[in-house]
Amino acid sequence: MGKTTVAEIVYETVVAIWEELQPIHMPVPSEENLRSVAAGFLSNWNFPNCVGAIDGKHVPIRCPSNSGSMFFNYKKFFSVILQGVSDANYRFINIDVGGYGKQSDGGTFQASEFYRALTDGKINLPKHSFLPQTNVVAPYVLIGDEAYPLLPFVLKLYSGMHLPLDKECFNKRLLRARKTVECAFGLLTSKWRVLAKGIETRVDMVDSIVKCVCILHNTVIDKDGFQLNLTEVTVRSVFWQNSGRPTNEAKSIRDIFTTYFAHNPLTYE
Image (cartoon, rainbow, N blue to C red):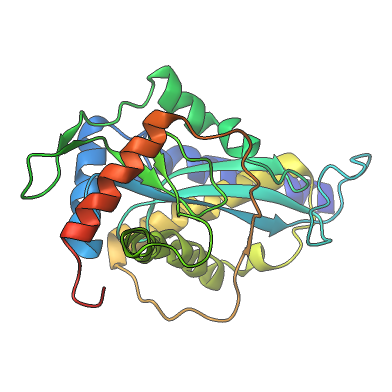
């Protein structure tokens, strides 16, 4: 068989794997699913009302023909962007693949299908609920690092040096819970080494290969559990530069969680 024939067989196979397994191992999150995810973050990471940890990674690729610099990222290699949202057990509840490697601003997240699904109501977050052992009502949120935009449904780290103790406490709690998505990417790359080197095929096939290994990652965890024996191999992080100033609503929501963590510290905090 020639290379073209083999490539088409591979493409058809990875697409078929995704289409067969996605409804089972990465269904579109329902309100009930997200409540279950939030329960996991509370029990495993002491972070209430969290429906996922979000991050973006560069997947190295061979330079696509006639693409100019669209796929050339700030780390000086060609890539597509994999955005993932993990649950408390290192599974992906959502992925978005195919952003240009050169994209390095918060607009990449806000242009994703996941963001549009949240804002258009195609994915419904659970209704606001009381924080544990309080009469304080808070929304359900995603958590990201300081490079993500602060939104009413996305909490991010406080930036700056010499922060007040309550903000330091918030950052520690968020960083601790956000490691789930970092570990998810680490597990993914250590098992599926194709993500650690430049994938040499056309871009649409790259997207399908990445989606395939992500759904296989979930399938393996669902069937066999996981072991955190991560190697040095990782998928490189995306440097998001968020645009726009956060709204007062977004700031107020982060303040609610900040106050809660300050009044309910963990022993190491």
